[in-house]
Structure formats: C-alpha cells, structure tokens
Length: 502
Image (tube, rainbow, N blue to C red; front, side, top):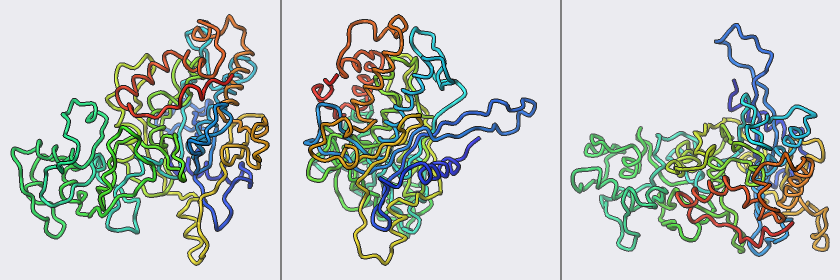
C-alpha cells in the first residue's frame, strides 16, 4: 500500500521542488528540521477481481514545515500574532489546520470535492472513510522520544533495541537496589506518578525488588554476560537492562542521547548522573530557550496530546463529528529507538479512560525510514568535515499548506521574515498560521455558512473572543481536562489573557 521510504522520499522531493530558497539553510553553514503530513487515499477505479493484489494509493503532501526555534516567554504577545513555537513538527501541524479549514470551506460550499462528508449532527462533518494521514519528521521529536540508548558501536547510532527497554532508565550495575535516601519515596502501582510513567532511577530499583522473592546482591557481570540470577528469572528485558547496563544480545548501553528540553515544574527532575541514568523518562518537558525560558511544550508531548485529542484543535472541533487523528508516524534516518517513540507518543497516555465519545488513545503506527534528510544536522556536518566555521541551526521557518491562495509562509522570530521592529504590528508581519490568522480563517468559514446550519456548540450563546470559541468546544475541552488530570497534570498552559483577541 505504502512504504516508509516512499513517504520520506515524497516529503524530501516536495521540500526540494515546492518550497522556496528563501527560508532554507545557508549551504555548508546551517541545518534545519523537516516535518510534513501526507494524505494517503486508495485509487477509486481499481478492479475488484483480485483481492490479493496490493491496493494502489495516491500519496499527497498536504502540509509541510521546517524550523528549529521557539520564542522565549518574554516575547509572547497577547494579540495572537506571533508564532511561539517554530519547530518543524508544530509548523507542519498548524499548516495542516490551515488545510483542514480550506477543506471545510469546500465541503460547506458544496462546489468542489472535499476530504469531508456530512456527519450525522447538524453542521458537522467527518473525514471520508477511505483516506488517512501520515506524519513525517526528519528527526525524532524533541523531548521524551529523543531520550534513547547509546550503544557501544557508535557508528550505528540507529541500531534497534529490545522492545520496552527504554521504558526504564538504566540502573548502575553495582548491586545496590535501594534508591538514594534523598530521592522521592516510591509510590505504588496505582499511584498517579506510576500511571504517568514518571520513571526515575529509584523506581525500577524498587520494581526489581518487588519482582523477586527477596533482595539479591547482583555482582558485576563478567564479559558482558547477564548473571544467571537475572537471566533465569522472570524479569522483563527492560529490568534486565537496568541491572546489567546491557540490552539482550550482549550490547552494552554506554549513555543516552540527550534532549535539550527541560523538565516542567512539578515533574520529577532529571538525575543528571553520568551515563545512561542522566535523564528520567516519561516526563513532560518544555523546549529550551537562550536565557529566556519558553512556555512551549516539547514536540514529543504535543504529538502525544494530538494522539488523544486529534490534530484539528479546539476551533475546528466545532465542525467535526470526530477528531482528525494521525494513522502513522514516519521518522527519517537519525538516532532512533522504537521503544522511546512508543513510550513518548502512546504509552504515557495508554491508561487514560472515560474520554468523550469519539476521543481515545490511538494505536499509532510508528516506523523509521532509512533515508536521510540532506539538510539535517548530520548530513550537513558530513559534507563539511574540513570546515572550521560553526554549524548553526537555520533561524527561519517555512510553512506550506495545500491551499490555493498563498500556500507559503516564511517566518523568523515568530513573524514574517524581514519584519522590522516598527513593522511588528502590521498585518504583513503576521504568519498565516499564527493564532489570530487561523482564527480569522475560522471566522470566515463561519460567516460563509447560514446560521441555521451552524453546529449546536456555536449556537448556545454569542461568542466573541478566541478563548470563548475554544472553550465552547465542550467535548474537546472535556477530553483535554481528562487527559491533563490522568496523564499530563503538569502541562504548561498559557494564561487566558493571551487568548482574548477577537
């Protein structure tokens, strides 16, 4: 039907041919990240007489984003006209929302084919059942998904590791199974902390004790072998790795790839111990800033949220009978762990329950391509091995949406590239995917529909501000509250006064 390399190649070709030179990295000096959403749909005129024949599909990039930056808290604006987060994954998703708004406009006007068909409720639409969306990123999302084991053979940083290994960070093989006295006391299996997978080094230590009949003194393994007391027990592979510092197969875990994303206030902090125990996994994190702390949650956290609430957001939820979920995530060639990806995007939320109708934790298909993005940091670095100049991330971000009017948008520091300090307040300075501009597109859609065909959620009372329209999406907000209460309690939310624009 489709392969991960087909998706990656399609996105790379789209980047090369459809995105402008403006906003791309300066050759031999800058690098960037790439993300996209691809629509996959079966070809409708296929013969039905051969059920074993692979289904042919069309693959189309419907949104794309590049970027590596986000602004600090001090630069945030209450007018909604600045992009707080310009990481590629976020740009791609906001560009996707622009695409969805256009497709809803087509559906409502009944003039052209749309990806939406009428729902069962007044004023609402649902995705055509024969199509789905795949999310592509040239690199693992920042935050929890990027905390992955670094094995002995560093020339193969993408080597797969045993399933579930990364669910628990390494415990040094020193025979000490008790946590340090100054660490947080272990909470039972039904505690919120355990459910949320806030797994610091002391937790697997206790789990090791509880999974054996008594305390065991585990000596140093000889020549990389798993001690018989561990090998012959019923311990899971991740606990064996925690004890021995090895993944099954005898490969030594020497460290973890580290993320620059910082643990949010209220979560257990990173241990910062040398080696594989440096990070705690499963935690909510914010993107780093240069001296000015950001309020932007990591891409791992946002993808996990979209996997429960959908990619459409609160505004578009008014017009949709069901959330718009991603069916798969494809990652380009880079340091990668299947276990870390599944932990970060799916398993942290797997116990969330009692969600409103239509919402749920999705069984997201996650795979990696072996095709490298040529503008990635590692690819650019490899090409400039003899260069003495500093390699830096590209300061610009590019947005592209499959819409007929002005599909492209190039920004820097949250505004249209080239904006001066004097021009910040002008309409020309706004990105087409900023909050205020997406809100304008939403209002335009609403005004094109007669009021008697509006969804019920928009007919209850008169709504004016961006915040009021978001809050009125009651099912979406209920799902978000449940997700926060059961899994993401420390999520940083912008104060309501940042959403009062009209």
